[in-house]
Length: 114
Image (tube, rainbow, N blue to C red):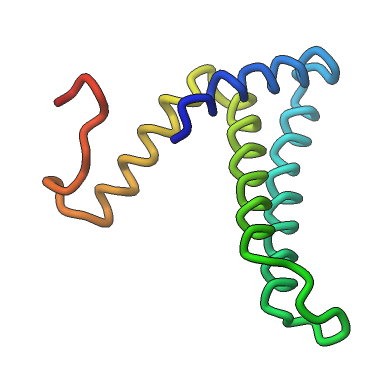
């Protein structure tokens, strides 16, 4: 994961907290933003493949990648609304998923556990 992901999302979440508060409604809005961004990634993929004959090919793989980055950022920002340790929660989840897919010897240990 990018070394700047968490420091930057802390700043974004703090700015959103200042502008919009930290209510349950605001947490829901941040969660819905993830879905909005995922829809934009899907739309970019449709545009990349030309699946809409009326529009043709309108996007590139770079456009899809850009939209996927927006999904990741929105999810990281939203995660701040549901835990005080978003980096640790993601790290634990990432390793849990990896354990389901690979043998234990193939999974890199987090720094400090080697």
